[in-house]
Length: 320
Image (cartoon, rainbow, N blue to C red; front, side):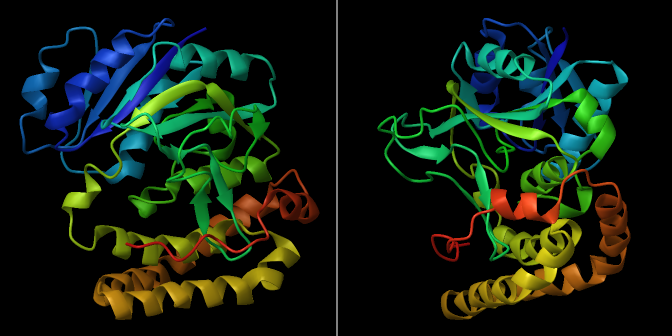
């Protein structure tokens, strides 16, 4: 059994060494693959200190999705059984990888395994897997809650967090890799949605624990989240919501999207969100072609997808 952990990096010098050291200390050994997205800080000097890792140097910043794709392409070319994503601003408990792999090995229908992803303070939750709602908006289960073991049951979940999740290689060969047009935000929900449509299961493993400095990279970029959220939310819905559900929930998704738009008007970031919306329109013809391919090969019914999405309101429009 071969496992590779993929870490996209762009200007992550502040966190990179701790991230790599935590992966080198895992009880289950793996290949560590850094996708170096043309950093302008001292990241490359830090990486040169590690002879045990593989570095894939890129000529430009491919973003989160493009970095994932570059790393996973390498993993598939080398016939690894599992590709595992990890953020460069995270550190892992020593049994994190072992517990992820053991969960995947327990059932061949499991395509994705996600972990308990805590904040770096080890008290607050970042994610215990992601929901997708009939309002077209994904959100992380338990985010910002104090961890009181309320999410310690192994369970199926709609989507795995792209920050620290395992992906079965045979599933990736079937459904494809990440959508590079997303660049950042919700690319992990997109691939999980495609996995659900293809009949794969997504499992949450609470005994696999990692710790995250939230938005350590993207928080430095003005209006970055507003732009990519404005772009990616419509594309996620267009590509993946199947059959009659597409039309049933379109009014809900439209309402919530423009509620988010209105929030940008009030709090700022309007132009970034508006540019994202216009870019989503630009991508729609391409995504309609992708939708046809995804929906024509799906293995589950729309009724099943309706049973695994969340029907309650999202917590609130996110502050971007």
